[in-house]
Length: 329
Image 1 (cartoon, rainbow, N blue to C red):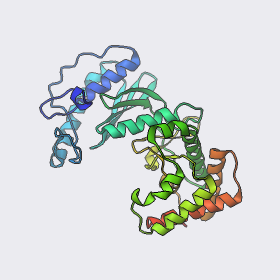
Image 2: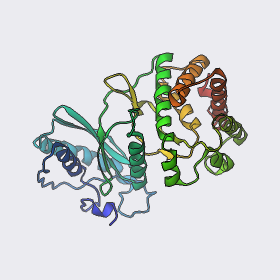
Image 3: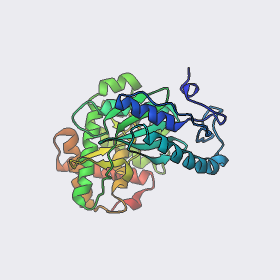
Image 4: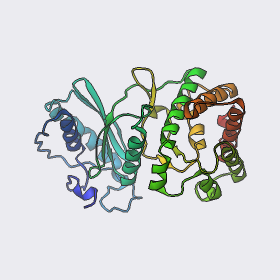
């Protein structure tokens, strides 16, 4: 049975998101979901690129958005009667619906994926990164592949970078994330085959579009010298301000792993980490090198000035390869 064929459906072929959220939270609370007789049409968001035929056309998104807002408000009242203190829509796109659900003293992030591959990538990341003590991702509470459903702890506070120390903190957290992923390199190889840095360097031209492939080739040579051809890494590939969260104890965690990928160089995440700082802070060259020292220490337990300089040079070359030089000092 396919994942979508198992979902509650109506005339529009969509998903009754409110039912999914309620069933999930009732599972968390240890109760059975109440019986809701929802007469409204179910909600779906389509993008035309999927091979399935039961998606709403993009031209209907405006109409769906208005109906979705009205239906969700109605269902929130019903869900409130089922011991929920608050249900808030965070995001509703063609890719996923995301909600904050508060039940008693606990807050959960409920995500309903519309794309099976995105669900699998995010689940792989949460399970891979959630085993150790690094706490670099939200704790996984519940998942359901048939529903495309993922429930994690909710970390409400964004990570605001205001100075060099804050920028270095982000890189330190990223170093812990990369270290946790690399720690499971045998599992990664088993899941994805030949994903070493050497294999990527030998065939990178088919992996991305570069304005200047010579620059990226030079960046990869630096990384090969630093890490060796057998190094295995994972990247988030979607680092931005809203995906970096600060826990109550001050530590930083990352969320939203639907683009999580094994076998790509960490350079992509290192350059993209700048998104977490902009526009509140624009790091200088010195700030970059300080942040890279924190990154290397968090990932490897050691660092040296030569490696910091070489990593920064590799980031400069990567930026040039993608025509992103304007974002560096």
